[in-house]
Image (tube, rainbow, N blue to C red):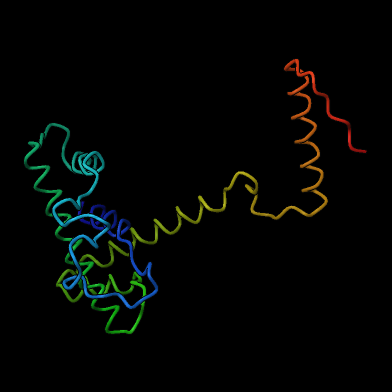
Length: 178
């Protein structure tokens, strides 16, 4: 559960957007954290509840107060690791927090025993994200279309659109390109 909550939280962290060196989180205005005050910063309750339920035996129930407390603990943990990651990043004169900074922060905070598990979750996320990017609507095979293939596909789509329009009792008819 630690890895899933931890990685889910890290995925929500916005870093390096301004291009400036990251200011230490401890010196930031609380409203700078994802546009919300610290009290408003949270994780999606439905997702967290699902994660909590998946980690427990089916006959165990968790009170709503206990769920809220777990979510608050996760948020605090993410803030702690984010702050330490930011400090590691600043020490290396980098502008963007990288996964290596998070791994180093976990080590520095005494959570070194979880690094292998967090790294595995990170690699799985990278693989799943890469898979999604490759299987786009226009290019599911991974191979690029030639210019001729693209022109032919465009003409076929135009013809299909004309046919749909004409079958829809449209009074306007388009001339054929030829």
